[in-house]
Length: 382
Image: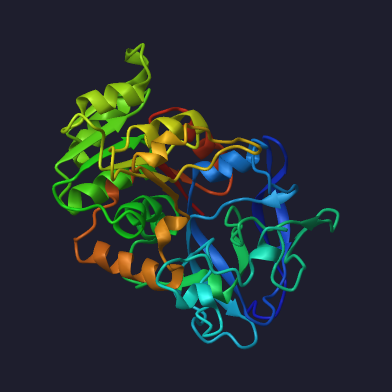
């Protein structure tokens, strides 16, 4: 029986407050104009989901349905939707791409930060200012999250937040291009444009940091150093391209000073990347960048109210610091392209999936796995 135009009742993991995540039955309303309702096939757990659940996200709203790194199939579309149709395989994107000729951000090759629905997305709502989720047991409203809300068997997104992908692709792998892996690759290829023969230092060897290493190796960086406090991550980092790895806890002096001394020139690294969200590590990454031309790219998201500090002299002596959201990729163009690279065997992502779980309730197990220290991405199949 067709569900088009009708509410759908399904299971979802609802965050009611800080670290309060429960399986509930929710009602998912039909998509309105410019919207698409998706059947979520699988969801990869990202640290950003945990960051919001922990209460550190300044934009975090409760109750909400978290999740944003997913693979899905279009169930139905709202009025005016033309880029996807029922049955299409898609990957949601938390950074929309409206492609409107009047959008100076979408028209610019310098950025991917389309602001078309940013205001309502930050409020946990759809573009018309309302929600498509209600709690079945009492009819109360549930907020959206990052414009995606994929910790549910069904969800509704704006059309401009959905990337159509080749149906031949395994969605459990393609979903990784919805956030972390794509972000790490894009930070290297788009934002900093790492050059062949360069030196790179990567702080934090989770999925994003490993994607940075993989991307740097692919463009011919010759010295790649991984920094983490968990030595268990060093093996995979070396396999992906690290020259060597170090544990910052093994040194009494600041790690940036250690790195500068060990750098190929003795003046720092050409490119440094923070993949931790820790403001102290961000400072270390900046100060480990090469005198005269070093670039530091901040990828990790810091907690609410956190600030970064350093001496202005670090900039006077030629270092530059920049940040990235989703690796600078324009979502609806980039995710299909990255998926095709994967299908052609040019981009391997298998190593990122270290844990697999089944069913909505498996999200709880995935969170535990992510906290264990040996998990890169835990994928939950619905």
